[in-house]
Image 1 (cartoon, rainbow, N blue to C red):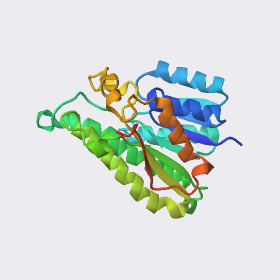
Image 2 (cartoon, rainbow, N blue to C red):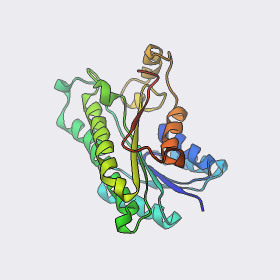
Image 3 (cartoon, helix red, strand yellow):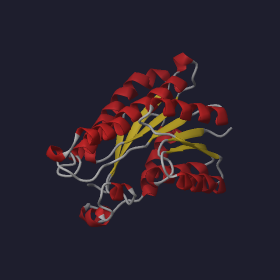
Length: 248
């Protein structure tokens, strides 16, 4: 019986690349999107062409009820969830902290921190052996910004990803006895749409050559690390964050 993965923010970028790789390996895939339904539908169609079944569901991860509904739909479709990729996140245009308003910070924190924590909670509730689950895997998508700080650009985003690192480490210890592994990846300069969302569409091209490997990374390279953390080949790995950053 195929395994099932739920991916938040699965319609574009790293989420889409992860969905496609999972589909190629025979997983059932449930992806969420928040605004771009056409992109989600394209990803669903591409996953099916790649050999996996895929469903899509609109979900604003800043809303608890949306997350609960997402899990319900995925469980109704596939019966169980073996892995969750906690990927949905946002960034805002570059500003120094002294110029940020509270509304901006709340939006970042509600999506990137609270949303990720609720997604992880719902995954744990389904997977925990003490709640009649069969265990599973959670992979959190953090960022190298958590280590580098995001100075002069987005210390709010960087701080939100620092919270994801802490969640990964603490939850791995908390859920290990439940048969649930929790790991994370920290992408560096990756060629995705997030740079345009932050007001610098050429950011990856500008910064990529400064990495030790001399280039930007791809969403597919990040997806390879995520899927490895989901599979049995990483069965003794938990509480770990993999930097997919070209050495940055």
